[in-house]
Structures are given as C-alpha cells and as structure tokens.
Image (cartoon, rainbow, N blue to C red; front, side):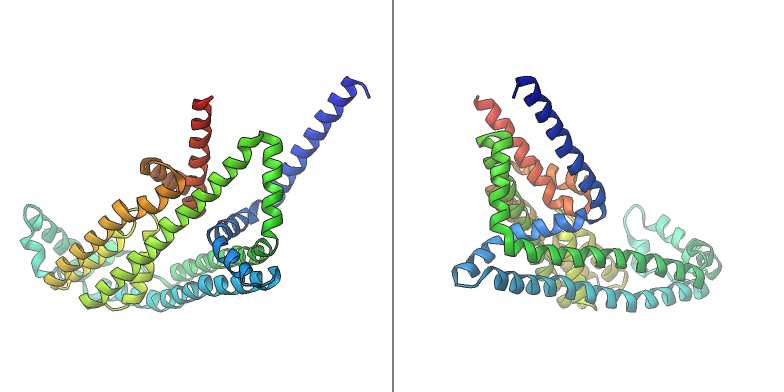
Length: 345
C-alpha cells in the first residue's frame, strides 16, 4: 500500500471517528448530566468499591449493593425536601395573603438600628404596615399564579427525576465494569497523547475525588453542626434547615446564606441573644471549614493552590451547573499538569 493511500485512509478514519463521536454527543446531549454525575459518584466512591471487592464480593454483587445504597442516600433527602416544600409552600401563601389583608407591623428593634433605623422603619411603615400598601407591594397571590408555579416545579422535578434514574442506572454499570473501562481509557489516552496521557487521567480522577471530599464531606459537616445550632437557637424545622445548609455549604461560602437568614429571622422575632449566638457560631464553623479543612482536603489531592481550586469550582459552576463543582477542579488540575510538564521540557 502506497504512502498516499495510507494517509488517505488515516484521514478518512479520523474523520469517521470525529463524526461518530459528535453524533453520539448530540444524540445523548440531554443525558450527559446523568453520565457526568454517575462518573463523579463512581470516582468518589471507588475506594469503597475496591474494599468490597477485596472482601470477596463479585462485580455484580458489589455494583448492586453500592448502587442500592447510593440510590437510597440520594432519593430519601430529595423526597424529604419535596414533601417539606409542599407543606411549607401552602403556609407561605397563607402568610402572604394574611399580610396583604392586615399588614405587617414593624419590629420594635428596627427603629433602633444605627444610622439606617429611622429610614428603614419609615419605609416599613409606608409599604408593609398598612394593608393597602402591603397589598400593592406583594402583588396579587392568585390561584392561577400558584398553579403556574406548581406546573413549572412539577416539570423540573420530572426532569431531575429522569436524570437521577439514568444516573443510578449508569452507576450500576460503572461499578460492575469500571476496571475494564478504566484500563481501556488509559490505553486510549496513552495512544493519543503518549505516556503523559495516563498521568493526566489520574490527575483528573484525583482532583474529582479530592473535590468531592472537600465539598461534600465538609458541606455535610457544616450542615450537621449548624443543624445543632438551629435546634439550640429554638428554630423550627432545624433538620430541614440543616439539610439545606449542607447542600449550599458544598459551594464555598454558601452556608452563610442560610444561617444569616435564620439569625435575621430570630432578630425580627426579638430573640436577639439567640440571633447573635447563631451568627457567631455559624461564622466560626464556616471560617474554619472554608479556610482550613476544605483547602487541606482538596489541595492535598489536586496539588493545586486553593485559588485555582476556587476558580475551578466557581468557573465550573457557572459553565456546567452543579456538576461543574466537581468537573471544574478536574479541568484545572489537568491544565496545571500540562503547564508543569511543559515547563519541565
């Protein structure tokens, strides 16, 4: 075979591969989040999979056990949130209607705030204390609007449920066939990029696992501690607030949104001591977690300065949504690895 024929076949084969891959990505576009979540969860829990395999469990048994456990862990909190949200939404609508009809009196402490107390109290009196003004400000809480919101929420929940089902299904096959898939991926990466391809893949895996540990474990820890703080402060639904805090705490500096709002609620209810104590406790927990624990867990695995970890987390979140929390640091880790390797040449 002549050199020109070989080059033609190689170009044609490359074009065919690119076309097939592009077609597959286009066809599976709506399912890519499920595949990405399954890959992240499998990578994060892979040490547990190896531990079970060393205890003599077969691939199918290991996959079945881990998939069932993760499905329960993922589904139960979502059901809890959905049920609680359905209960609380009705109470919120009734509260808004009550405020529209009778107004909302300003708390006594509001006028005593330094510098802005007088103006804020006056605005509150003009816009919320009077029933007519409150009705204008809050708008009309009509049943049609609530039905529209419920319909949109239902569609979103159905979409998320579809992603969750395919995530769990993909997880089973990743746990069962993961070793052969990993070996094939390393072989292909080495053929395409040479020996550095294998190391880049390992860096990306380590970055994902370290990010999961740093975000999820630290977020759960913050949620648990602040849940205790909510309960001690006398807030109702402390468990639900702790769960929401844990979810937001997976994003660096996300937990303050909940505990500051809870402290303001306590302040509005004239529970000043509890509000200050909750604010101080939450600030200490978040400061220690975000400035000491999280950088150690993520940075030691990714070998990235924490600034680049933050850029990867927020850049990934902006570009890819929630899954970007874990993909972003992995991409940054591969980028820095390429940079370091290029600097050594």
